[in-house]
Length: 81
Ligand SMILES: [Zn+2]
Image (cartoon, rainbow, N blue to C red; front, side, top):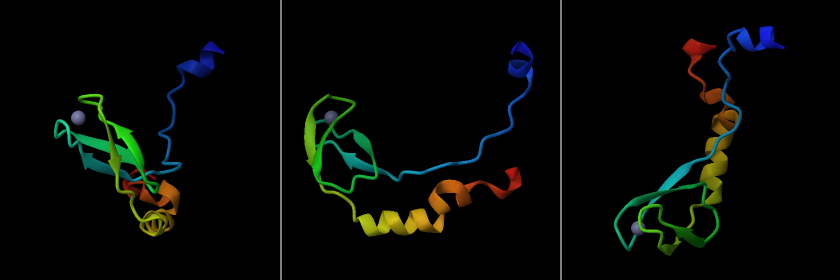
């Protein structure tokens, strides 16, 4: 068991992805990151803890990027493969 932990780990490749979209908080102006927001909803600002509604992004755009990058797997830097 201890021997297994002492061995260096091989670098792990990407295995999934989200697109981080930023919204400017209408209360304090901080940019709030939301992962792939394809539905309208309320988000809470990390700066002032106030909530505000967001306009969602088009799901087709995210789907296209996911296909292009094979869900993150094809996004790996080729120098590391
Ligand atoms: Zn805020």
